[in-house]
Length: 111
Image (cartoon, rainbow, N blue to C red; front, side, top):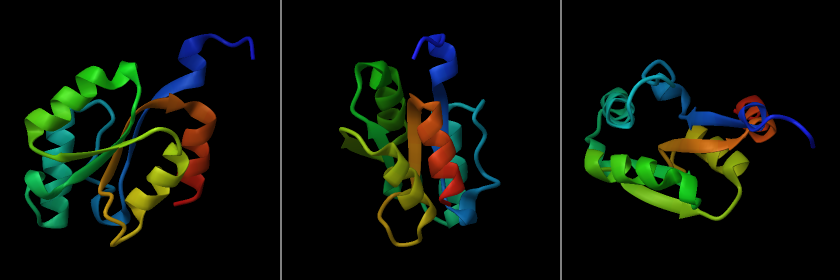
């Protein structure tokens, strides 16, 4: 596909219905994690954030660690991870990172 990179890749953040009003794509990682934890009545240290294992996420991973949350790295499948973040009891609280725009639309429509 001959499309500019900024059109193909987008910033993503996905959570369940219990935290949908707690996220802001423009907010910092630590603020989003804290707000989601507050919405769920939990502490940041108990949150699990799923991130694609890519070099582009190095700074994101540092920020998640600094916020005290757990990280689950995946090699692929951010559509499934986005849906997991929306399902209660899945063990996934937040999906964060940069990924394909088409996959973001699929994940959003699946939740």
